[in-house]
Length: 254
Image (cartoon, rainbow, N blue to C red; front, side, top):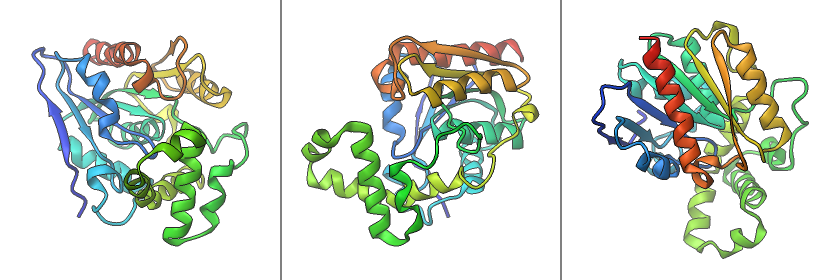
């Protein structure tokens, strides 16, 4: 059974609870800077299956299992779902399937690889045709080198590199989960959706946020000036404001 070690910060305001969902090759700790800027809110951060403290939680999940894991974290208590990258896809899919549990969704640069305009398979996805730990390790290293650069990857301690490679099976599951079918129907999401992107992000991420904001019933777009895909770590103040906007939308709808 999946066990999700979760970090919960108790807030002082009677505001909706916020649950963070991290993206591929990330973890709950990545939202720590943002959480420190939201001391008045009740926040929940958890490591998804196969990552960080949930590394030993069993088989890497497909999208259905990722949604089920989030529902387990919610424990029948509605919340504002804040997702970064693939975490945004999981949050949106959960909002569609479990509308009573999603008060609002804040999805930052949630990818749309099923869209016809999304770029063809990237270099980091080449190992998807392989199986096992070797293919997973290759996928992780390519992903990390692309995100942080060759020099920073080489400077990481060997133990950190090994830990990242151990998360490779979760990485492959993440990539496969959104390549085979559309993850959610935006028209079926009834709660408010705040779509976010950075002005320095890749074209595909900006377009995905723009299309999400216009395709859901109650959507809006928030742009973070100067931010790229890692806005939650590089621009935590602005990302915290992005989260607060979703909380405001949720509170207004209560």
